[in-house]
Image (cartoon, rainbow, N blue to C red; front, top):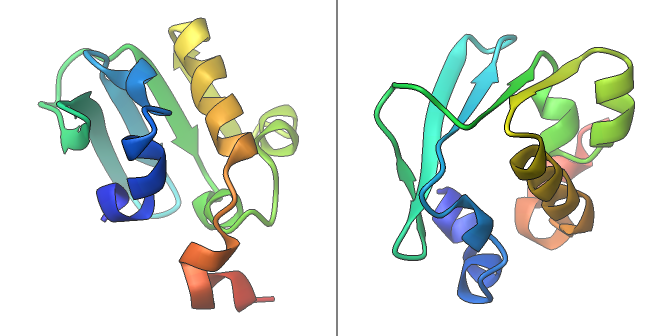
Length: 111
């Protein structure tokens, strides 16, 4: 699903900074954790092992639907990043520049 959502960015190489890196995304309010990497231009599940960066989110829906920006969530301690600082900054900048309104459809309409 992420490959479809980020298809234009994957084509343009905007996620190439993830190549060979493992990012743990933990959404504590949903009780899920994903290990992701980039291989051959596609986002793939990585084995649950050590990771280069962890992103832990308690209010994932707010970030995913752009109701709150990453900086606000981070400074309010609702978003935690750990590990490779350069990789974390690259992901943050990618998300800040991302315009998903036309791709997320109905999710953007929730109050």
